[in-house]
Length: 129
Image (cartoon, rainbow, N blue to C red):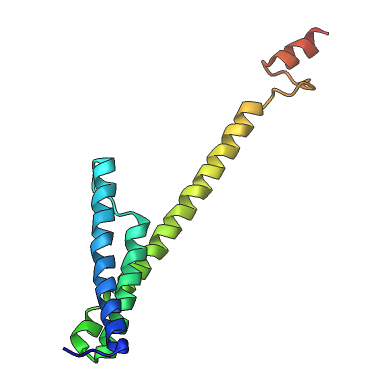
């Protein structure tokens, strides 16, 4: 079997794509074992995009419609990253809001200059003076 340098390079692209598909499953399995429940880490989706893109390129090079059509999952992989980022932003917003609320409730009426009728020490001292 005589292969040109270009053919060897494209074969390497196809084999690397398959390796990426395998690695993403190992990462998902490892993450699930660590958490003792089924989880899909974000790295799974990024590796999916890399692998599917490489496999698509290989399929185009080989002019193989089966390989090309088989990479429709790229849409789902990209969508899952969008959903993941949206959820992450929502959680961060909720955390910031909760932290802000906690700070406000912890400091409400506790200023050293407090002269209100609250029950904090500064308020009691101000009323006693």
